[in-house]
Amino acid sequence: MNLILLGPPGAGKGTQAQEIAKKRGLVQLSTGEMLRSAAKAGTKDGLEAEALMAKGELVPDDVVVKIISERIEQPDCAGGFILDGFPRTLMQAAALDRMLAEKGNKLDAVIELKADFNRLVERIVGRYACAKCGQGYHDRFKRPKVRGVCDVCGSTEFSRRSDDNAETVTTRMMAYYRDTSPLIGYYFCKQTLRSVDGMASIGEVATSIDNVIAGLSR
Image 1 (cartoon, rainbow, N blue to C red):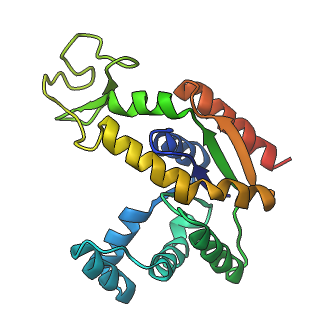
Image 2: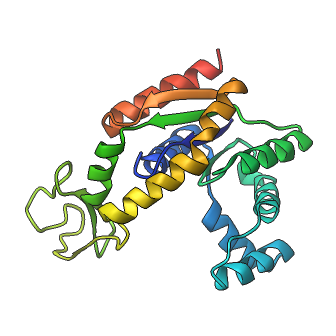
C-alpha cells in the first residue's frame, strides 16, 4: 500500500505517518532523509543533491524523483510506503505519477488532513520539546505532568524551534496554500483523495485514517 499524507504545516502529518508505518508495516519516506542517505551512499544523484544543498539551492524535481525511485526499489519498501514531504507542487505530483506508472505501481490513497489556519498557528507557536530526549509538549494542549519536568526523562531543559513563531508560520502557511494546496484538486480528480479532520485529537485522527485505509481494501 502506497500513501501520501497531505496537509499544511502543523497538521500532524509526521506523527500520523509514524503511527501508520508501525501499524501497517509501511516505510515512512522523508524527502530530506532520502537525499542525505543518497549523498552518504555516494550515488550520482545523491552527490548532485548534496552539492546543491550545500550551496543552499533547491534540488531539481527530476533528481528527487530519481532518488525516490531508487529508494522504493529497496526490499523494505516491498510492502508499501508513506511519502513525507513530497510532492509539494503539481509538477512534482505529475512526475511522481509517471515514475510509479513506469514501475507498474501507483498511489493507493492521498489522505488530506483538513485544518483551520488560526488553530494551526496556535498549535505550532505553542509547541516545544525536551532538550534531552525530544519529547514534544505544548503550552496549552500538552503540558508536562509536573511543571518544568519532562515526563519521559525527568530533564528540566526544554527548547523551541526558532522558526516556530507567528511570522514564520504564516509565511510557511502562505507557501503551502500557494504551492501545495492545488494538489487537493489534482488528487480529487484522480479519485485517490480522502479527507479527515486534522484538528481532532491525535487518537481521533488516527482512527479516521485507519477507517480510510480499511475502506481501501473493500
